[in-house]
Amino acid sequence: MASDIEHEKRLAAEAAATMVDPGSVVGLGTGSTTAYLIPALARRGLDAIFVATSPATAAAATALGLDVRPFHGIDRLDIAIDGADQVDDRGWLVKGGGGAHTREKIVAAAARRFVVIVSSDKLRRVVEGPVPLELADFGADATLRSLRALGEARRRDAPPTPDGGVLADLWPDTGTGLAPSELARQLDAEPGVVSHGLFPPAITAVVIVGTNDGVVHRAVTAPAV
Ligand code: DER
Image (cartoon, rainbow, N blue to C red; front, side, top):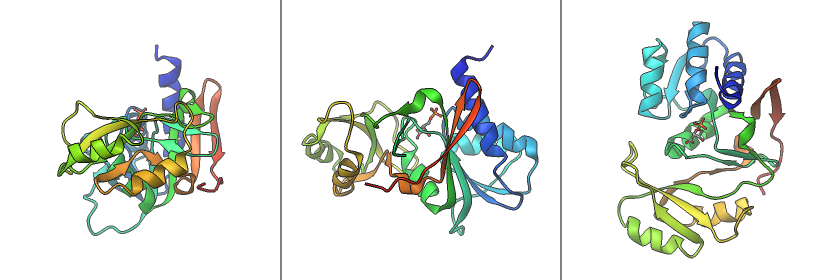
């Protein structure tokens, strides 16, 4: 029998699958929660176009008959659905445990509605480290050195991303409980950081939380500060 957490992920993913309209252009996230979304979408047999945030998602979706297209010549998505590593009370997300956060952020930002699907263990009062990073391969060690002004920054033992980036993680000096807007600003200002896993509340329309008793829809309205 599936664990409670797996059950919660499946419930959240299946609820999100019902939000996709026929004829939509849909962004698909990456990870174990999205893995429940893909079959739920396939069962609906929608006439829709899909953009995948990773080769693994593209392969899984294609195998189930979804029409996956490259993210070229498409400048707007109707909806994007993805998991998260953490969701806090104000709607900040930490993403990138699976290393796909650069493409995930691009897809989320291109969508009219970004829907986040999580099990209840992902909820936090305030998001915490580690914060996943993708660094440009060029000068990655110098970037890591510079990032150490913010905390412990370590290269991840992982292959390069599909875009040739280096995965790393930052444990900010602030201990538990980040000031996410300030940290995001500092990371955005670091030239060698391609992207970081802090997603501001403004990017998300709704968070669907799977619980033992069903799903809870949380609208995200908090300002990105
Ligand atoms: O790596 C990622 O960004 C994933 O989307 C992650 O945030 C969620 O992964 P999970 O569904 O396996 O927990």
